Figure 1 (tube, helix red, strand yellow):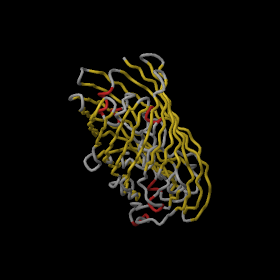
Figure 2: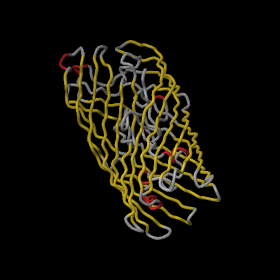
Figure 3: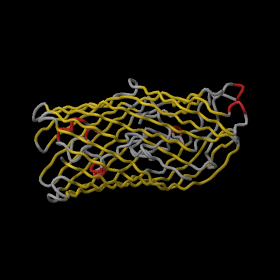
Figure 4: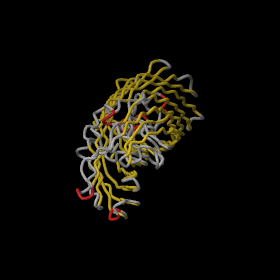
Length: 427
């Protein structure tokens, strides 16, 4: 089996499966990604948006752009998920069992640029992947009726502006264009195969405030617009092949409506001597991600998967050691709560669980203009199970529609490693 789970990290309804930019799994809980700062990766994203040591602030708290001048950075994270999944499932009316290995590397790139317009204003643009998820199993694996390939690709293009009010207060805002693509496949009715491939654009905003107590101590809070106020329509193709009911085979129009979870981020940073201490608390409202419905112009009509996710907290602590003018070393710890509370709410498309982060990183200053940042994190996920089968198939009664009883009992033992590198250039 080939599968990736991506980390920490949306579009709650793009849900079920996905890859951001290229192919990846969300490396924050749910299907959120935060892997667009390699300095942040080295301290488990503690102090996100307000530490001021790279140009990614606009993706966390745009007010933090006030801490940097003009410059740009490009980076990428390599995520390797490894482990196995085993269990039993109902497949075409028969109970089958199996075990699949998990071992797949994926890449998550990003690009940021910022220009200092004046002593008070900074303008910046970021291109990055805030959400992503991909799970890819063999077509004949024991749970194929519940999912074979699930992928979410999300790309944000975020023009942002920060304004320094005075020596203590700064504010910032981002107006973000978001592209999302969903691909979902699974076997069905024994011989059939279903393939959804849909995409679309949406908009949302992020707002931030930063308060600097002194040059070495500051706090920031940011807010991302909530899912109930921002909806995103995805449309595309739904293809059936090999179905025992011939009228279902062919190309149809598929779609869904997605939304964004509301998110709050509180960060703090304090420097004392050669050390910098940072912390962040993130609150994400996944509560509106209860059911995920895909519609089809075929006789299938619609398919609803039940999720019933809960709101989550993520907490991180980090430390930077400013060894000299050339080298900075850092480390971090974090706990990232999963929106999935039990096996009955966990699906094979998003087999999510709590994550515990342990991170290390460093920055090497090549010269006055160029820096290289490297970060590494080990993510430990306690062993967990998925016992969530089909929801409502949406089929008319003449095609056997209604609530499905197909079930799965799968045990996941999967952890992950993240290694990232980025290059900064100060103009």
